[in-house]
Length: 300
Image: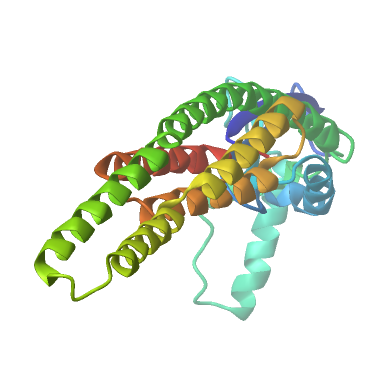
């Protein structure tokens, strides 16, 4: 969900009091930045002239975006080599008159500075443009570019996730044949202990009863370490992840859930581990799943 796009629009700004000055071209620049977030979080940084356009921009973005922390910035610049224009005489006279009126009531008020006069004269020309059509059109242009950038990133992320799915399947295949071997090793170990116990009891315990007990313990051990169910569920989740990545669309939240389920199965596999090799497989799985979880946050 990360991405960046910008667009610009120029307009002629003549103002009410130009005093035969050549018209200035005001340029509207709009940027949209998007970073990762589980939900849609919009923020706007707009100049005062465009504050009224925020609801329109919000509606436009919510209609096409579902997740991400999105920031919209807009700026109005005057495209002029000589940005400091001579203030119109009528405006200067008006400012002087207003200053006299204010200081008549507030004698301690500070007089206007040159910077104040230039700023107020510049503001007097601003706000005369009608941006109600230009801003939505510009936002649509930037948003289309943002979505295209996010789509390109999504394809790269899908390739990476499919590679992690392949690695998880390989680890699961390594784990499957380990369990029967561990069960057989444990059964032989129990039987050896039974034989040693028979040699020490001098017949005080019935051989059949001791052997049955040893076999029962071996069976309980086999049930306790059996991970076939976890491997089956893990394969099922991996199948669903592959299907969603190939299907595309709004799959981010479903992938979030599936990643949580993968982590649960990997944890259970580790808790049932009766050998270092199985523990290693569980740890490797959790590393891959964590990598997937971080990247899934980027997918809408």
